[in-house]
Amino acid sequence: MSLGPFNPKLSHRISLAKAIRLWVISVGITLSIGLVGLMLWREWEQQRCHQDHFQLHRILQTGPEVEALRTQHLAEICGLSENRPVNLYGVSLKYLQQRLIETPWIQEATLRRRPPDTLEIIYTLRQPIAILADLDNALIDRQGAIIPYQPFLRARKLPYLWVGLSKSAMSPWGKKIWGTTLQGMPLEIWDAIIKHPVWSECSLLGVDASKISSPDYGRREIILEVQLNSPQKSRSFWIRLPTHEIEERLSQLQEILPQLREHWDPHWVDLRIPNQAIIMPKVVAAKVL
Picture 1 (cartoon, rainbow, N blue to C red):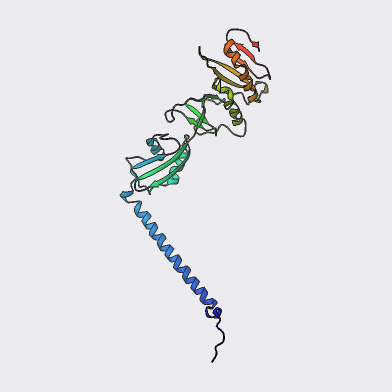
Picture 2 (picture 1 turned 60 degrees about the horizontal axis):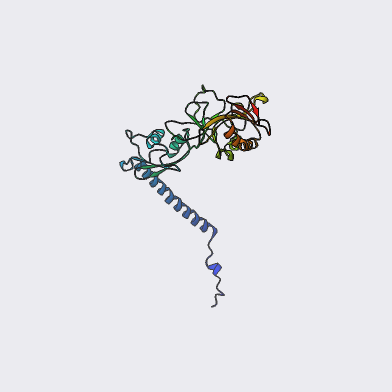
């Protein structure tokens, strides 16, 4: 008796209902295994939060600067103390990160657990560009954040910056003074000043930008304190600049520096008028180059 040609498709065919049952069973088994695994993991997490083996005993700090802040100070910011030991897995890394970046000195922070007893803090300090002379003990960074100077940051040589802030301002730490409007010194003006090659021949001591947004347009100006370095002695004087064409005026200053160094002892050099330098010597009347 002949059964006809063999058809492999017919030999593997199952009903739709049976296929659905098999799929439901496989999904149920997978979900059950996952749920049991999750419950076991949660139980392990709860247990290790109470194990003395995972008590936090050490803070490891890393970042672009080695020991930029004292480890004890980082611990105080995070609210950690040797007198109140905590479990490494009992603290919220997100909460500690938020506490760190809320401080005015720290720009970015990341935390990692290093079992069994170490918390790693990776952080980046704000980089100050000037000493904010309007306030006591204050620095300012490129984002316009005001940073306390001593005793947390190491001494560094930076120019002074005046922007017209009141010294009676309450709790200024971390406050932004630069923005889209003319509040303080716009970054493009700061960069035009600080990056000019003239400072390879003399030193910039300070920038007074307190009148940069004066309602009286005739009074708008930028004042620089500059130091001439010479073998005999170092002399400082003031330069008056307009609020525009900064690079051109500083190039003009660079051209007349040899004459200022050799023949003048200036008190003021006014460069607000194009192609002119009005010099006010310390002891003689004003003259025009």
